Image (cartoon, rainbow, N blue to C red):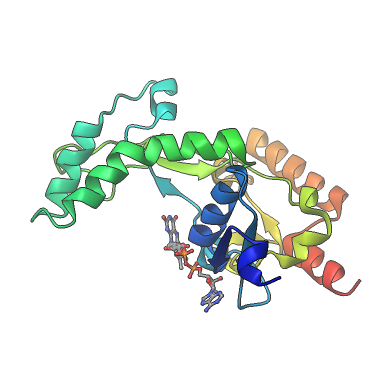
Length: 211
Ligand SMILES: Cc1cc2nc3c(=O)[nH]c(=O)nc-3n(C[C@H](O)[C@H](O)[C@H](O)COP(=O)(O)OP(=O)(O)OC[C@H]3O[C@@H](n4cnc5c(N)ncnc54)[C@H](O)[C@@H]3O)c2cc1C
């Protein structure tokens, strides 16, 4: 039997684009082969900020932020004047929120709006002060079991103690832990959880690969 008979979809590259394509094909019932040339999956997304820009997403409304596709179209028209790839822009604006909703319904992807993260050109017409950017909800890497070692580690600059990932909401507390007892308590709690689990990105990757 040839490989073309065994699979309905063959995806090259296990970065964000390839993994999403493969996941969507698999949730649609296709037999999928995902081929990655490096030793680990994740591509650039593994070392990125992990945020996606989804204007007029349903989570903004839940957070009390008003946005419309037309406002986003206005913003993009000012950011990228000239009407290039208008059909792609329209497809993105029409489908972005539905794509996120599909991933959340059918996979383990969970996203939350960053309410205080403005558009990159906040003074342009149609810009918002936050909410269009969605970031991943924390995911417990232990759920991946032995596959954790396949995941490309984040940049060391994004981690503490050589492997501890910090939620965006924790960063201000780490910065003022010496001045606020509330922040000190939160830092102690998150750090203790990290050490108690004995689980950090790099340690896990090392121990798993040496098994
Ligand atoms: C520090 C940093 C922060 C960023 N932050 C953000 C952010 O917050 N939000 C945002 O939207 N974007 C961000 N980006 C950009 C974003 O991460 C990338 O645009 C995105 O991850 C690209 O994904 P991709 O799947 O298209 O390509 P890649 O991540 O490049 O994945 C391609 C994969 O294909 C594999 N491959 C290549 N050739 C072959 C082959 N012939 N056969 C098999 N496999 C192959 C590669 O090894 C790789 O794993 C950031 C980028 C960086 C560097």
